[in-house]
Length: 274
Image 1 (cartoon, one colour):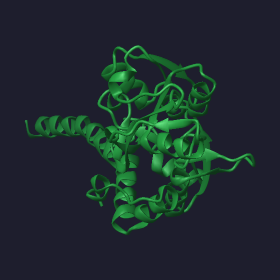
Image 2 (image 1 turned 180 degrees about the vertical axis):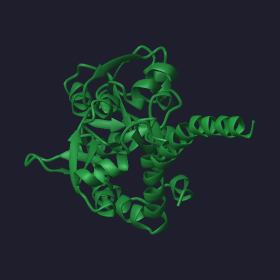
Image 3 (image 1 turned 135 degrees about the vertical axis):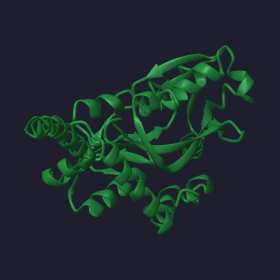
């Protein structure tokens, strides 16, 4: 009788051990299914960051091939914190998710607005920047208010937040989508569209540089928080990035970089996360 009880207990323990070990394994990887992203980056010795190549001063590719700007500087700080080399991967707004799914990039620092719709497929960090939209038009075809966008052909970068804004908030406008911000601006200059919707900073900077253009004199349209983006199953990597951004803000580095590239202070909305 005693021997039978002991045997049953031993069989029960053997059934429990694999389950327990499985639980320990999942916890050890920070909740990630598959290889731990943070450990993979450290082992590889290179951090691959997706950035926009045509979005100054956030990020822009120079004729030399070098990518510079606010986002690349943040990427450099991230690589430094990790103790690895940095590789920047140019993407357009429509490629940001696919470049991570295809394992060509570890993280997006590509002016990624953390919308609810995107959050269904992307895990977003706490924000490192805030921005809203603006409207740019030619002086020979003036626009006096956002209501004037009704019936107008408005250029936007495909898959961008501005694409969503013009589609959802200005249903009477006629969005014309392009693959890059450079093409958006060129379409306006060459009379292919009536206006362009880009970030508030981009519209106002282009108006200053080009006497034939003017930015609509209204507050930023639908200000949003800009975050880094990773794949949803990379929880430990996401936790690390949150901690990195929090330190970047609290130690004043985010403010210094923002002032350097935008000549304005970091938004109080973002500073509250530090």
